[in-house]
Image (cartoon, rainbow, N blue to C red; front, side, top):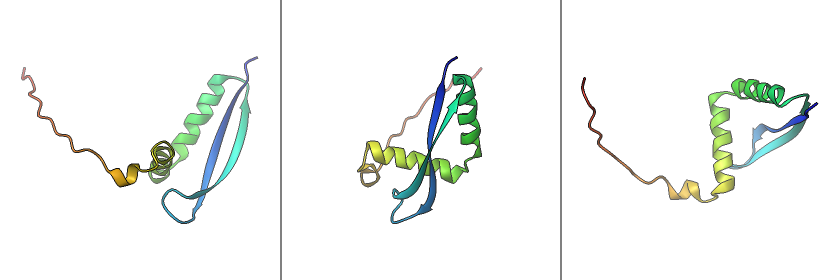
Length: 84
């Protein structure tokens, strides 16, 4: 029997800035990887758009702490489409 587990942080209330959140870590153990994937998909679907965006910002901040100050590079491109 394969064992799979999932570990999540539950964001609770906002503390000081956009990147500072109190978290409660939980671990779940599943009988299979498929069961773990299904549980992850249900958890992801239960989050609001704002919560998913906050998770994305937190992950970006962990990898690139100064990303918010740098901003995004402006890029534009014109593409010709074929008509048919």
